[in-house]
Length: 544
Image (cartoon, rainbow, N blue to C red):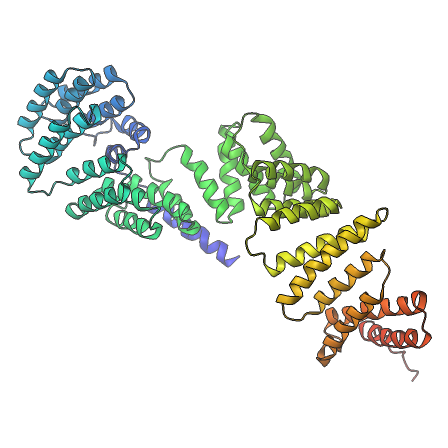
């Protein structure tokens, strides 16, 4: 309880700390990071704010429109931006970029010259022109791209970060991610507050060294704590890197940034779920569903959380609605498995098996699914299917563990012990079980339950009647237990239970099968001693 309270306090504190934003600048950062839909959303949202440079914001809205193929819309933005501030060189770059895409290279060149006059020796403007040529046709305009990059290098003495960002993007387009990351790092070296350099570096390097990629974004957030891009990207990378707690904390902070996106709240529910914060996650999902009952991800998160909270009736109800209301939904194997868990929790094991089977068919190479399906078959008392499915699970394991082998012996024991009308199947299952328990005993240290499993397999093989093999195995078990006198102490009920099982089958064998009065008496005496320790008689009260 104290830990949960502390977590809530920390989360509340982080939410308060993130209540500011960078306004339209967040939109520019998203554009430069290649997240164009997010850039458009924020730029449109903040366009009329008093702090917004509307000329520059219109330029970036135009660049997004160009990327989306909306050329006339883009030109309108650039014209508006130019009218708002004729001295802003970037809108001339935008108009030139639009002309290039429309095949008017000569007109584009005129706009670019005007931009360079206004932004004399401005390396960022020059690189923007190079990018316009690159976006139009990197092969046709290779000479112009090289010329603009050389000019930017000369004018800024090789210190303009945009040069290295564009070169990194060009390398990334060729799938040369390592070299691209090196260029992005150069951009960071020349501008320690360059968001796109950090983000693009992290994206390029994440699959090589996730922790180092994350550390770069941590550097960015430290320098720009109010950047929505920095907050969001680092939270996502924490999630991708399975740092659940850090992802939850940072995403909670980010959601208080005015420049977050509506879909981010659903992502927050996912992060809370993966951090085992089921009730807070459920609350967020229900909050979203109150306004949008058909929200797919929130419907999923609702029944996932209800299952984790063991509110199985609600989980079954909401899972049924989830599948019914989304006939074309992109369901995952985890959706079906969780639905199966909810059904099993309400005692509907036969229906749970059906859902597990669907999950296994969708993901046949998932060993955990096969193992879970075997468990469901066992609960439904379909022991043969349980054994066959567990065997399929074992086939996927390169080096099955001792527990895996022991589990397989148990599945075969269930088959043998419950098969009463097919002697061949019963014997075959018991022999397979003995094969597996022998493998376990070869690898594992001596343990009473291993002898017990082996003896029970012999009994099941013999039609649930003890034979000499079972009796001898129980003898090996009791000899082993006798090596430690503590196994006969009243506190050690597990070992006493093993003794009692061995002696009870000894009584049965020598009393009814291989009749031997002396042996029968010996086992009866031992059984009574153990039973007396397990169930001591209450002393009779004495008269005063």
